[in-house]
Image (cartoon, rainbow, N blue to C red):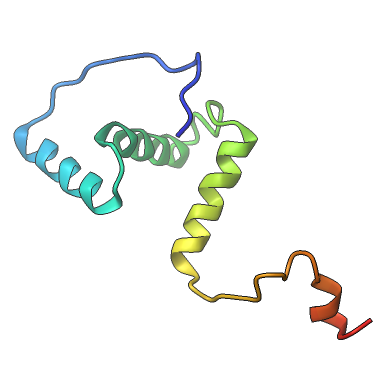
Length: 93
């Protein structure tokens, strides 16, 4: 996550059990606890129809989407696919 001028520092009180769970998730995902909290809040607000990507830039949204896709799909393609798309779609040209 890129930090920008729109971020505001805040503090919250959590039960020990919730903090333990957050730390487990953070370690598993190799992310900061604060990022896990932001992701959970973003998901919850999106479900409620509030905060629809209002704080995320287009590039942040695209990066997030590509990260989700790459975690689901493990297929590998040719290294030169982007520069030789026509070759792979239509054959030798």
